[in-house]
Image (cartoon, rainbow, N blue to C red):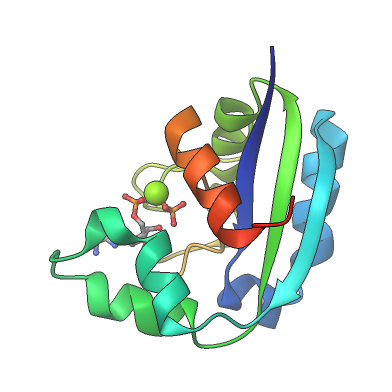
Length: 136
Ligand code: RTP
Ligand code: MG
């Protein structure tokens, strides 16, 4: 079944010039790009995007980080795109959880700067795609 997911290359990934690397891994897996946009987000969008983490100890740090520079936002499509992209991205902690071969496993060291985001369920994907690409 074809699915859509929201992918972000976070500010650390853009600053480290890993946009091409990330897009390449999406395409090599066989997933398709539906929309792509490089932009710097304000606190309001960031807080809505990460609403599930509001109140957690790392929330403020997360908002400062995600608004610290341009991000690449993408809508990615394909069979089981949500799980497929989370496999490509790797687990949240780049050392303890992400496996070698994944983006985080290969290219990141810290949980707070783990390069990429991907929606974690069909409901999240729907909500996040509407938030980032309201005209899609
Ligand atoms: P993301 O939403 O960014 O794709 O990451 P994720 O699903 O793998 O992880 P999630 O639990 O949604 O957490 C969102 C982001 O918050 C930071 N985080 N820090 N210090 C901590 O314990 C902690 N836990 C999460 C990470 O940067 C994570 O990507
Ligand atoms: Mg998440």
